[in-house]
Image 1: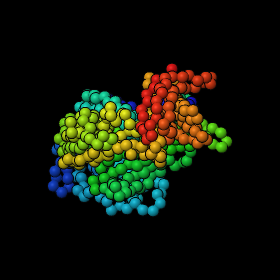
Image 2: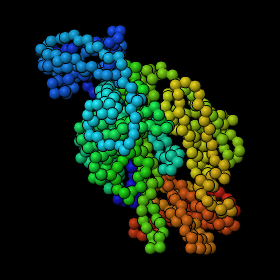
Image 3: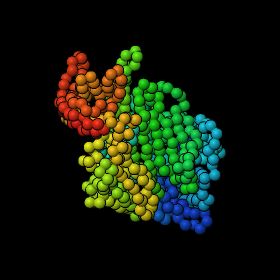
Length: 558
């Protein structure tokens, strides 16, 4: 692996939909009704099955429960109607002659499937393709229903508004270092798609060409494929104290080692059995590579028509840099996570169906604790979405018409960039109505010192800054500071035999801790070429006061 590896998220953001199925001579025109009152069922998923159990056509029932299925050829078929949280119903075997049209009525059971009584206890048990009657099979079947409907729904044309985001996150606090957004509108949407199950089974979920690492995530087709089900254990998972309303189907590779793979959980609502989200991380990677934080999340939404779509999604992959540590045996070279690169997006509008749902609001204040005053003019935003506003003269802000969900609330301001640590974001959960209160702040000086340099003595200073005009292809960069008896490096600091550490992150920021006061300090940027020669950049000279927090931006070497 080279000294620096760039992460690429291997997911496709597409604005396409499948070709409509051409009408054929064999047609089934039917209706799905409730067993109790005969009312038409909206959004039931109808599948035309041949004698081998293969799906040959599919449709969703409309607002009156009606549907049309076109058989690809004369023959014998069954029709199965599925509903999330309800028992499925299958017709008797029907024979269709050439050019024949037939009518069919399916009576759907009324009783709901309640997953709430299912308890998750004991050691997880690896189950391949759960059989009928098992607790895992019951939960998995509800997840499969939603995944099947979602996979089919991608063929339907929707009018939509989508916001795609790319973000660079701090690997420890997940504070947003950089974010870009792109809004698009169109008809037909397949926002989240992986490569084929065959390719993933052959090459793994993480690939590299020697410099660039590509991370792939699962979509509905992958999770339903034979390749996935034959190589992954399924087991029940509980949502825990924070998410008692959820129950999950966990998945993990059957074998340890081998190709890079994924492990995660498919989360469902215990009461409604509706699909909520898929979370995943990566397994089987090089143990010497620090890949904490790599993974993703996909959130789903059911439309009023019964169709399912990916509402929000993100995948994170680490950008790695070199690290140097001093041991009694000498220097040890390794790798460190410099940042998390995230790509994702959100569907903010589909046919007005999303707009009709109740929405909430987020309101609060941005405060500058270093000055003890509200922060005016801060850009406040829900990270990874298009919702944003600006704080007023009193630091107040408000975001309206927010769809239900859990978000990362962040802010940016020139003042926040003048401190050595990124301002931590806040996690907020928006309900279907009402206002959520939230507070954002630049930490106070004491908190800043502790966050930047934990345990540092109060009289010692902190020097931080940014490398300007740094070319990422030439990284890694270093910063050196010199006193009469003191030398500072970006990865280590030597002073009277004591070693301390600092870092230059992927955004070009560096922080030097434990700087002795009452001295003149010269700070200079440099990098070492492959041939061992040192290339010097800009420099600055400053006097260090006791307890000072000093920002020094210097020009990076070319």
